[in-house]
Length: 238
Image (tube, rainbow, N blue to C red):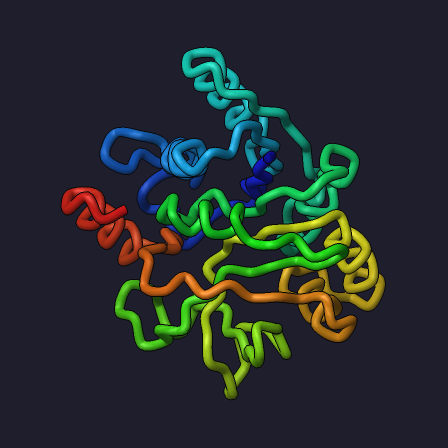
């Protein structure tokens, strides 16, 4: 199964560590290579990376990595990279006509989370989000996480400003091409985010959740998250 990685934004919150977030060295390895390595361990065997900000630099580095490791990486260019992340996902529509995994270039995910997604039943025209019910986890910034209200294995609502929520979005999804219809619907109404599309899918009854059950994941979005990532890698926890 293919894996789509969103890597188009500026990453301004991590700018002190480097100019281009996907290529910031984490334990001497570019961040996006950590992401790809974990997906490969889980059995994903082809990658589509959406680039935008300083995209030529990123694509050149990924081509070098791809050739050296014999990992298939296709590129999609998002010239509208200043818009929210759903625009990047929609830009890859022509590349992805079968179920695929979606993740972010700055999310370190335990390969077992990907394995659980791959093992999940793919219901027709649905999208499944891996969620963490441990909302008090110290690993991720509680003021920056995307919050999810779930019930009976389904998403009711998702967004950063929810006051009533019981789970956190890990940034790992098992998608069918229905995600693209939801993105088009959401963007037509002014919401360019992936969360906007998930809210559309929730209204359609097509947004599912999968519990990560304590497995480790981390959004490496700022210097604090970067420090946590270094410690987790030192401990072999991710």
